Image (cartoon, rainbow, N blue to C red; front, top):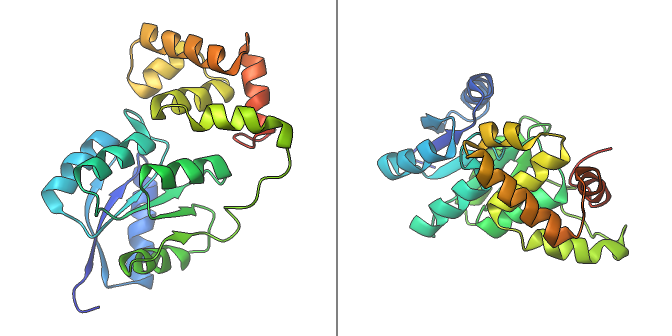
Length: 215
């Protein structure tokens, strides 16, 4: 490509962003990081200011989080190219990111050369999913109902469900997502009601069964 590819990098860890830039400088000098954000709200503003060719984004961030950020950017610009670069390799995260509008998904454990390859592929109009991330889920056919309920969760419900499953209290989730405690408590009640569970332990068990979190 004649023109350099402009990238907006979104990750709440400065060390990750620095490593990403070093990797690209060595592997793909035609790819430039033109702006960086450490949370979704900032990413939306920078996207409008810099009009990058592609956004490379983490999912786990404070504030509105990655999934909601993808959704909001796609609502503003349906042609936006977004590549998720996340620690999560569970299929449910991949599907939700793609459903929100991401064009690709790779994990932070992937080989270094996958990152520039994914960026180039997406800008050539192809979706790019790291090999092995999307697979037929035949392990727990009896859990189909849970899968459907969780698939129908709003982005915020899914974020809170994931954090509850990891053992965070409502107070900690409120801090993590910059929400009021009462708002989080209402979501927790709603989530339990939808899944027909009465305890966080049951909720975590569902998350493990569906591969949303590890044992």
